[in-house]
Length: 378
Ligand SMILES: C[S@@+](CC[C@H](N)C(=O)[O-])C[C@H]1O[C@@H](n2cnc3c(N)ncnc32)[C@H](O)[C@@H]1O
Image 1: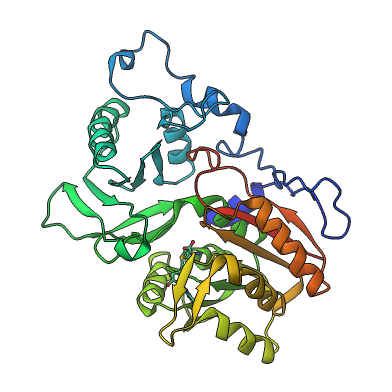
Image 2: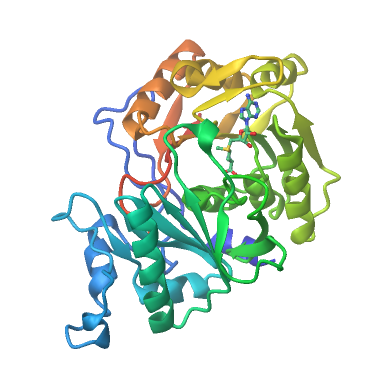
């Protein structure tokens, strides 16, 4: 299968720190997939990645949109990704990625559909107009465009609205990431089903090829599909039965049986102690909780308050050499904060680990998307 060869091409990661003897605390890139076109790009390359294909005489010079410049001179990174990156994504079997980021919004591609997210109506109008010019120029076929408002409060979140395309068509579709297929639904919720900022972490799961993966806050089980395609068994926990049903569908979309996989509709905070009591162990654990949630029983999860106890419970079911992903999209918790928290939890549980960070996403400007670190237990 394609996934197996992907994992083998990634070269061994380097240890960059240890909970016991790290001296500089800097999180560096942990695995150098030098053989992969996308992975070759470093942060410092981004300015040239974004502009090298556009000589000043190019017709685009006259268009109204701006190409990416997320170099050091800009504070907020704006613009559309370089067409060279489109070719790289295509070459590696990916058609789901971020197309554009501006201060008040962004545009994502999911197969032939596009999702435009905006904080202000002006940003929506600008992105819509630029998308048309850009898609014509790079020759990308856009079947439909959906748009969603990004409210400050989660309770005001609504499913995206169709703004371009046939309203009679099904709102369900499929996107591909490194040759794996993921179902999308633009009609059921605020998010269509695949978080693009976790792409490199999903790749890392394929790279480490765990035997048993515990996917907490599993959503549509994309991490589990990545593990299962390399032979893992998985346990998926989510409060939402609907999300786990979509997770099963993602297995089916990739011709993966669900026989060796469990789907538990429950609160992660109650399931983890149960798994520990039964002596269950996992060699990979995904912890990517929401900023805030409330279970049907009324119990709340607040990431800044509860992440520590969550990680401590997860460490109780971690094999001696397990890999644990600690991720959040809470803007108040950056990678440094996650690392400090993880060090505290390791000390509390008398465990030791090295820290790793997935490669930066070439389609996301720095400091956008979720923050995450990997713990490699020892
Ligand atoms: C940020 S999403 C997780 C995304 C997922 N890691 C991925 O990359 O596809 C959060 C998920 O956590 C679930 N959730 C929220 N609170 C929960 C809890 N206390 N226990 C279990 N699942 C929870 C939600 O239903 C939602 O599917």
